[in-house]
Amino acid sequence: MRGIEAALTILSSKKNSFSSEALRKLADREKMKSTDITLASSLIYIVLRKKELWEKLADNFVHAKEKLPVPVYTAMLAGTGGLMELRRFSEGVLINGIVETLKKDKKNQKYISLVNAVLRKVNESGAEIIEKLKKSPSLDDRALTAGVPVWCLKAWEKGWNRAELNEIFEMFESSSSYSAVRTKDSEKFLTLLEEKNIHAFKSDISEAVRITESVLPTSLPGFNEGLCSVQSESSIIAASLVKKFYSGKGLILDMCSGRGVKAGQILQECENSRLECWELSSGRSESAKKELERLKVLNRAKLKIGSALEITPDDEPSFIMLDAPCSGSGTWNRKPESKWQLSWKKLDFIVDTQKKLLDRALSLIKSGGYVLYITCSLLRQENESVVAEILAKHQDCAEISKMIDFKGDAFKKGRPYGFYIMPCNSWLDGFYLSLIMKK
Image 1 (tube, rainbow, N blue to C red):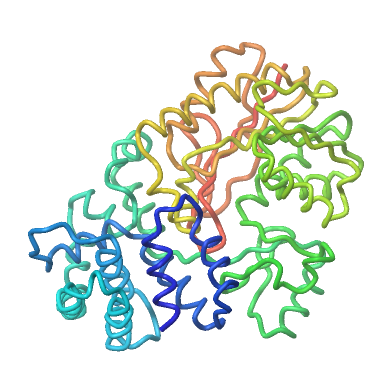
Image 2: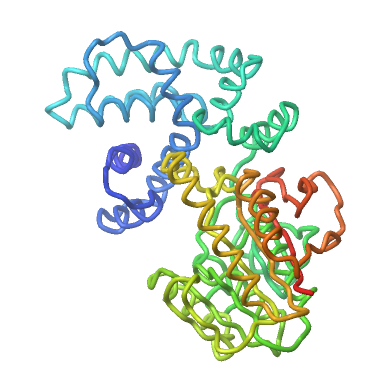
């Protein structure tokens, strides 16, 4: 049951670190077996994906007047989520595993009978309660089953009507998080995956391969040699627009380069290009350096650390990719913990930053050049509203409405600017893209 114990330890921790990184460190330190790591990561993902739903479900059966200690309440949520969504694992074994883990904590042993009783009631009637919530006309109830924080429903309602929201929530509710991989030699890569018994198939997206599980990048064949990069199909589509509209001359600027995944794709696809990567975080910049080195394109890149509102480019850029910091609402299926760190105050700050960054990008770009504005958000406040406000300040700039052919359910036109990529399958994240040209 070390997997259960590891999951509860990480979920109860107050340390400000991502659970995946925390689990990796714990697994290395404790020399955990792969099966235990898989169980721990599954439980952590399940709890974080729909935390408010498990809270509502467990609270139905908790009648204690006192506030439960964090480890106890966490165990209850993990057990509740696991009972409802953990596949191929006996309900009785899971409940006993939760209880046995609590027994090791002498301070909270008095709550063992309560947790045991609540989880058994959840196992008996939890699925029925969830089905009622799914059929409820209340948008709050649908948000719960989709794993969307209820507090931010007003933000969602500003950009989508009721039917569209139900459709988006259905995507969040049903989609798993599998790995998409970009590779220049899909046939060779698929053969190598088959040899390792990893099930995968070619995507409709150029240079993309779909793997039917979530994988650790370094475990993929050919990763260290630069054969492949783990990258969502939405990210691949976004970065491919640089190649489509780049003139072939002049500097490409990646204003918020992060860990350099899109920068690596751009440099591989635009073979004679020069690229500047700007990044506020020195840690992410160092990761970008390693990524570009792995892909053997570092010699054409220059990395600068600092605020994208203050750094000066070496030359006037002919193409700017602005992958702006955002709420990440389009990636909540893949990165569920990020949504619980969001608030109205943080969202307002993010939107203000996005406006400043896009304003700076349009000021920096040369005449005839392009700015590609990207977010991994489905919230209109971070997307069309930002583009509309900043375009009104730059009369010498106009959006390119026909930047991509819209085919299939994955693409939706913005109102009126840009377009969305919807997270309608396990390999797509929710993205927003707007391409702007300076006249």
